[in-house]
Length: 422
Image 1 (tube, rainbow, N blue to C red):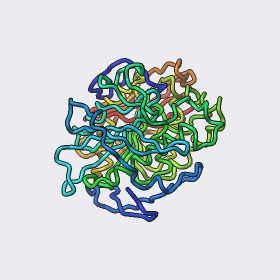
Image 2: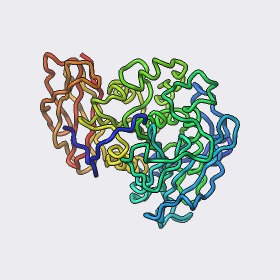
Image 3: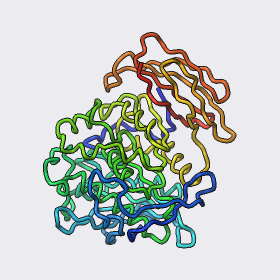
């Protein structure tokens, strides 16, 4: 079984899962200089498959809700962030975590945390990031308020209560034939971009170092906002992404059942941005086939990919993948910590070439292959590949239909190549 460095492994499944003017401003690239090189951020949508108003790139109203505060961690406070729905004034519940030493003189990186379907804002997830020095904003996207006993492994019946404010519910695109502004996905995308704008407005946040991380349906949203919002310093979709409709899996079926929702599944936007993107997903999962992530990884300008054998589908497990935090650190610091695949494998057995981080080597490399279609019921086998410095060679079994190479480095970080169809 592929082993990412999980800090915990709990069972469960949750599929039901800068403030601105309209100008451009500088931001760091995170390319080898500690994050001081300037890049441009555009304070309006940079993709037009869905028409999103420029107002989403302005900081929303943000009000304290001390009655909902957690007593377990004084660094995490409760708020309501304005995000109107269907022409009505409305507010989304949020947890905001701030490191104790954050200030205008000591600005911190930040992350927007996007939950899956039937999920909510998770304070434990916020704490994970705050403990690593990030300002973390977790928004509820379905009109809920977490209960005081909620954990990342709580079933939805114990996770939240209904908010006093109006918001749509995730119905797996069954609302797709409504005017788009009335659909849940529009509301969720709107709310997340507003959340990014809010983070950009906070005086103790480094605007150049704000990213997003989403789980399950939240990873679909993470991929979507990455298409439209070029202010993200990193993007980490865990389990799902975009470009799913023509493949296998539960979310693919949702698009096929409700084709009006296909406007959200357009991968062209994510291919255009320079945002560092990290796709993390099982090689065998009911939510989506591993193939779309492989295609996106190959077509994106700046992407990393990790397939995990045996990774179960849950919020708690996703939040425990240490590589996600490592990748964010790489993006905001500019210091390479992940192996970078320079030459991909091929059906003819082309050697895989990698670029190694400083003081790092390859521990082992394996060829994973299947003679089935790579769907949730498919089975992957593996065989050892040969490592010679930064070059990996392998032999392809005669019965293989698809394969990829798994690479584990001496720091126990795992990356994968694209999947090759034979």
